[in-house]
Length: 149
Image (cartoon, rainbow, N blue to C red; front, top):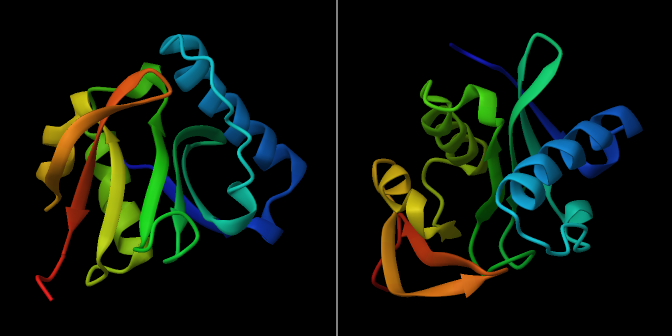
């Protein structure tokens, strides 16, 4: 299965697209993962938004950051696949699309849910440091294309 990918900056997002983004993030991060956290964190306006559609339904999403807008490095987060579409390779596709949208040669840092560490490793990310709790869920810092300088 291949999704139709669209990349928006904050000013291109209309209310229908914003509603779909927030609904998917809430469906997975709040309800499915049983995690009460502040999803509306003020960072959406600083990011670009990558959306993967099947027909007109939002299936996959991540938000992308330039250096200094989240971490000191390029970054992406809130990476999510609709539960009904997991196990079809869409997680790999979302990570690939996110990296491509940021730039294949860019140094990228993410805060990955620990249980997804192997997924990100397949795409060149390397774990650094210990796991830590973020909103009650184990995470780990991961880096891609980092130089030693």
